[in-house]
Amino acid sequence: MRIVLLGPPGAGKGTQAKILADRLQVPHISTGDLLRENVKNNTDLGKEARDYMERGLLVPDELVAKMLTKRFAQSDTKNGFILDGYPRNLNQAETLDTILQEKNMAIDFVVYLDTAEDIIIQRLSGRLVCSVCAANYHIKNMPPKVKGVCDNCHGPLSQRTDDREETVRKRLQIYKKEVSSLIDYYERQHRLRRIDGGQEADIVLNKIIGFAKMLNDSLKV
Image (tube, rainbow, N blue to C red):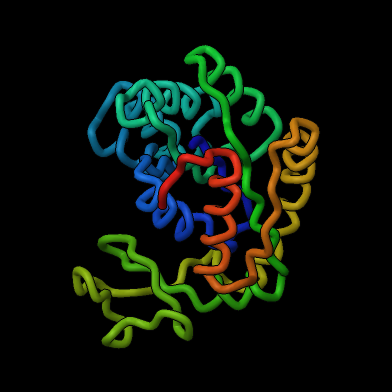
């Protein structure tokens, strides 16, 4: 199965993508992770990306597309993948389709985690991130065993500046403008599936798996 997860920040895309990839036994491809991996490994594309990042600039879409093209060429994507963090706009969606068409692939369906603004703010404003291993916690929903300390590596936990309520509201305004064209694009292709992202994580997961089973009767998860 080739599945794209869409949703506003705080909708739970990353969490669902990791669990879903494990259940379906396909790789989880996150453009954020892909970018960091290329920079860390000092690949040619990573060197280009680092140059933009060090100058405080966004990494161009063309560069991210090249990273995805190389990732899709790896053998572990043969039976599918879960794509998280891409596309973010209509231009990226069209680029993604072009990349996959060249490899005789296509997206099976797109999940949009439709999540209420108050739920997103509650989730993000309580999020804590480890400064060492980037593990995520939540003050209320998933607190660390020791306050302010990562369970995995014992690094310090802190709140990201872009997770503060006023910043989250601005991010959501921008996201809504960008995602409307994406939703229209995938609805016209009859590939969009909407799920209430405010539900419990296991309920959301089971609904996504249900969509997958409807498309592939032989799927066993």
